[in-house]
Length: 630
Image 1 (cartoon, rainbow, N blue to C red):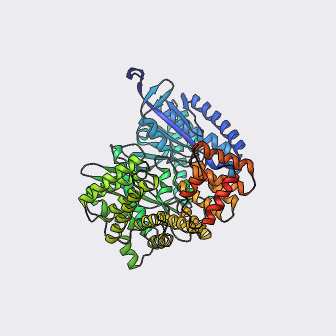
Image 2 (cartoon, rainbow, N blue to C red; image 1 turned 90 degrees about the vertical axis):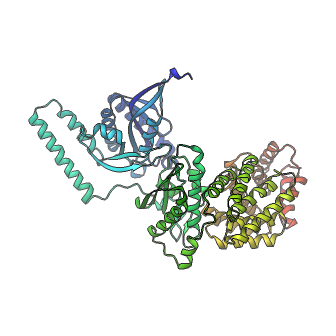
């Protein structure tokens, strides 16, 4: 598109979406569609009435623009009044509440569409609004502060995703309909006599004062809280927390690894506390880059507390904000801003971790305190940054990315030869080479993985991810008892490690202890509710081996929801259907195996299965043969 096709303009943007839309759809799709269709029509009519236009309306969202910011705010409060009256006629569980955010900003216009930070800020401000409520940006507040008879609550400067600078945000204070009525009164007062204007103003002030007294002295604040009853998992019997990925506020997108690394380090620090329940990185990072609600995260993951924050890094400064929220009450228990030199990152990590402990009232023994604030593996900032960047590459699980990670880790070790964690991660890069055939010699790569794991543990024997690496190597070498011992040591070092629990579950299963394998997989998945695809497949494998075929089918299907081309899950799905006598479904799953690998052969496949007991291999291969594979 040529540059001259774009047109810039200043406009007021209204962004709205439905609170709890997923729940409403899940409980009654038809009723939800009918309601949102009617509500959208009403909103569109009001937007037109206030001289605005609907720009887009995907899913449960509505985006509109107004030439006048006053019109935009008037329209928003009128929308909330109208929808409040409509909701009064619905059962409480079927009420449909919209959150509205308004921003005044510069946008790019292309045809009927608008783009740019002006739109993004409106969407982010909307995300801070309550159901049935309205939030506005500082630019909107500055434009309307003295023009409308409304009350506002300043929410402070908010760090929002993909916007470099914090945004001033205000909440319009009202109970359903009240704000709209005050606006209408203010508008009718225009053109009246000074006496009538004074009376109208006095009436507005009296109403405003009454509302303020009601809001702040008699009425509990309206907070959007997580419902314990709606949580996907029961709350643990100890304090539970999810650490959301810290937002990268730096101008350089390549600094993403630094904000992710800070998140990782906080999760690692918290997970060392045995009387705390910490959700794994793998699950919390599924929310990365998404406009999510803290309450929804808590319900998805089954936790009471959520930590969120942002990082801005320059050559000579790091600026970090963090806040801890009790999702079941909506209260902010702790928040802090740090503006330090980059070398202070290690102190900041410890400080955040300890402050979270205090806010959650977690009491630590002296030994636990020492373990929590253990000496950092490196105090060399350059080595630390290279290791964090390497971890980001490793987690992409491609040959090229793992090779790049290996180079960074070797550079980190050159900078700090005593950096135990770097040796452990370097070992993992060689293990992946051996596991996925990214090397000319698998035995040689496995040997190097083993040696680096041992070296890391010689420097720091409390690294559970070095123990899990050692366990994985032993399993590849078919040394089952040693694999179990190392996995058990990893779990003992960190009971909050989904990786350690999953590794133990895997090696127990391969050793023929399938019932125990299921128990540990369930514990791992509770800590990591959105688990790695191979864990879901391995759980399905354990269910198959214990004759629980329906559960095996469910686990395999969940794995395939993640990746429809994941051959092992299709294979176990086929074997499970075959074992139940459901021939058509077994054959269909077998065809998927052949679609992915037309050269698939049972003889070659059997040689890759790392099971100790030949009977387990024979049982599995027999079921696949019955499904039509050869």
